[in-house]
Image 1: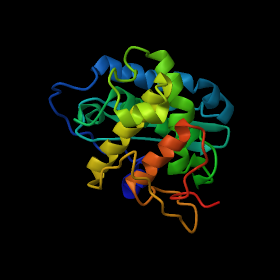
Image 2: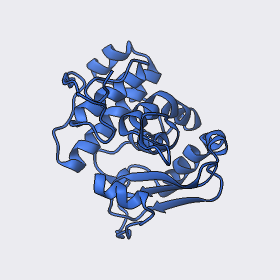
Image 3: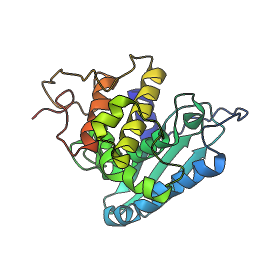
Length: 237
């Protein structure tokens, strides 16, 4: 994953593999609408950061790849914005519309989430920051744009209902976080995370790349939903 990110960050886009599209979790039109919306929501940030030289939005709807990436290139105040999104992300059996929206928000979080940074020169926020930003700041705004597509389930698990005290907004955030985290775990071949098995480890220094466990990422999402501090499994206080 780190190697893939470095390739993308250097501006080398990997060729998209093509496939027939069968039974996607969302339609191609919705795929594009969500991408357009996450850019539109961030127009004030794009202007404020000076990411206005060019923008390259790469939509590989028929790609077999799962995931997305975002970065900026250029001088401070005069840089270009790059966002790449792969269509298999919404066709995976664990994908949900909310989980996909969170992934888009995560990528924008790399650009506008703030410190600590993966890349000080280009001000690309750390993975944990991007995760937190996605759930805490961006996802509720996306839900406001698409209330019918991005909505909580009608029959939440008893654990989610308890955690959220039956609050619909919280339920949507947690369900989206769980979907995105489980998709990540499956893609990486790692243990699936759970809401009742938090990562209790504590890092010796802040992990700027991916936390050791996908469970830590889920814990970070949950903390973001409740405006809590970053978990110590990736952030050193």
